[in-house]
Length: 483
Image (cartoon, rainbow, N blue to C red; front, top):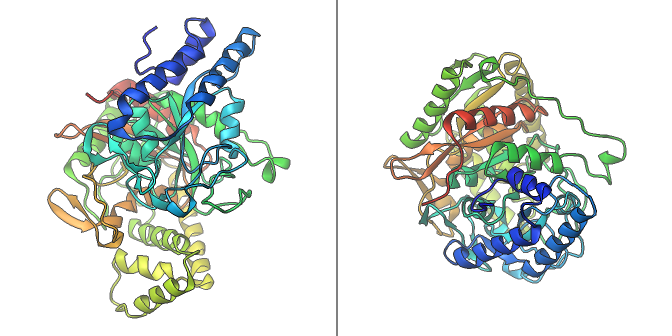
């Protein structure tokens, strides 16, 4: 069996047919990591001894006639998930020795499905960057160009998949942290509907792993094909057994359509607050053309689309009010003084970020109420359309930028610099209302870098953008390994 860059679906089929053992697949994956990861630095916490033991257990289970969705399939896990016996640091040096005693609920679900966990993948400090580097584990490089970022905060997982280090990975997404690395590395990712997949055990150290309901943040699957995303989402989806799972059972609706020609799609490539770079615009147009050629109804404008500027402002307010909620009081007071000095005429996203950092509870409630109005607008739009196609970020992967003053960084879009965090507006389009979004490869830039787009779908209809991703993969191709 050729096992260079097989899909999880192919591996599972080969294992069921007896063409290969999990022990063989695991040894091959470990050998590839030991050979190739020195220059990528995707696997920051290897767990090879336990992986080999788990693979032997999987082979014995299969010999007994057992079969589970991922039985014997090698996978990786983002460093931010608790794995019993391994450090969970979120890249923060004071917590380099934090060792959880229990697996995160999603790690437990992976293992229950039979997956073999090879190790943990690299992240940015506190998961708060569009790159993946920290003082503990160093920098993860893009497999296509080592001088560029693999993205963040699930950058290690995306780089691992693009490099053939396991067939699947699990990550998380608050500000595009699944979708942006997938876009930068040429793989697939799915940001589930908010609340669809339990998040317990994906918590910054040393906080306890409690079954809290997070605002904006989700956990989700990453893979090299759209079908593998669905396979892994089926393992991950469902409420926490400690809370909603006591009374609720999940039944996701089927995709709205099976054939491409039945889909109704709105395509966006312009945002009022930031330009779309030429390489990304070409990727969006490539997908739009494939949809139209396949018979889908494709529109470029709709009066039903929620206001993109207000959506970006709301997302920025909600994101940054939460991101500094645990800052020391001294730092908070400094931010409040800076915000008070802003001109009332300054409505830039930089000013919105600063004001959001010092939101009162009343401010947050008002923003949340406006979010509900946006959710209602999205419901109206998805009565007319099945999906929205748009960028994930305005550019392909950018060169490493480790300037510690994050708010002073710039992002280069076709030769013009823009505030670094302004590039989050496209990711926030799905995140703010909690909609599902699937990141799919959409070709290459003139420099040969991967370009992806996102397919945003109706709330809790995650199978609709996933099915559309599968149909697009058949028409325009999908993942290709780096050369």
